[in-house]
Image 1: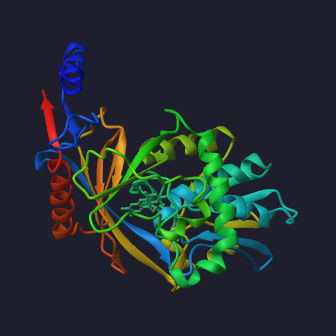
Image 2: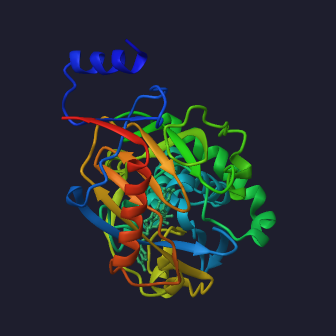
Length: 367
Ligand SMILES: Cc1cc2nc3c(=O)[nH]c(=O)nc-3n(C[C@H](O)[C@H](O)[C@H](O)COP(=O)(O)OP(=O)(O)OC[C@H]3O[C@@H](n4cnc5c(N)ncnc54)[C@H](O)[C@@H]3O)c2cc1C
């Protein structure tokens, strides 16, 4: 009996005859045994759309005087606001230390606002969050959300952002490791980078994190692509993580006020003398930052498959993240598109691309 037969028997004997699909390298003995994603049209449970708050020169963390108040900006995180949130919150906190007041108003309640609010609380500030919408009605709830500092800054601006980005990246990497586990919905996961045309390299934006995320070739890849590399990073489940951080904030006596601000002058009415702007794409209208532009992204979410415990990136811009609330299929980036309508053509491309990826391997499917 060969190894594949043994593994199959072991699975059946263990009674895991429920939906289990195993990927094996085609035309060979079973080198890798993995559950495969069931990319079937009737398994789609929702399609969601969000606008990444992108600035070609990267995020903004800086302080300015607004009347007699100190205004600290912390926005413009593009496609990695969940990833970097704790890191840029740390940069924002550094800018607040010289200020005499110990009461802070955080504007915004997405991943960036919540991390900033918690960090300020941990450093002795009494904090109120003011936000137009709270989770689950934020862009951060739409995020994938894999821990990867990408889709953040155009190549020619990377050097200017380097120091801040490096500090933010390392700090965020460290803080998320304190949040691993079911309570916050954060876990480490294998991510297979797949490509047909060339050996994948780390996106250059990830240079500051390159030593954190080793990237060796994947031997015995079960996927039908020519090249595969694997890294380990963290996956954050927004539907668990964001409410958990908001609950921590309230437990630490944080106040939440639902309020939309029309312009800067409205902020001057706040009682707090220290204000942190974490409004994401909202900063464009609120502060007239026309460098902020949306990159629209949409995700198809399939029925959860608890047996899947990995993610894939590629080929092309496709990606699959196995989350508890569903199998997330993504890979759309529409620059400067403001609508939240589903792009049906893109949805079809993402679905059929993943069908090819998971059908191209030799799949064994036991019900
Ligand atoms: C399809 C998709 C996939 C993504 N995948 C990932 C990923 O894998 N990893 C990752 O790290 N990131 C990912 N992102 C990016 C991530 O979602 C964003 O970078 C992140 O959500 C930005 O967070 P934020 O807190 O700045 O903004 P938001 O989540 O948009 O929060 C902004 C807050 O400010 C409030 N606000 C705005 N304007 C005003 C106003 N005038 N007055 C009062 N309140 C206001 C809003 O109500 C909200 O509470 C993805 C995004 C999309 C769309």
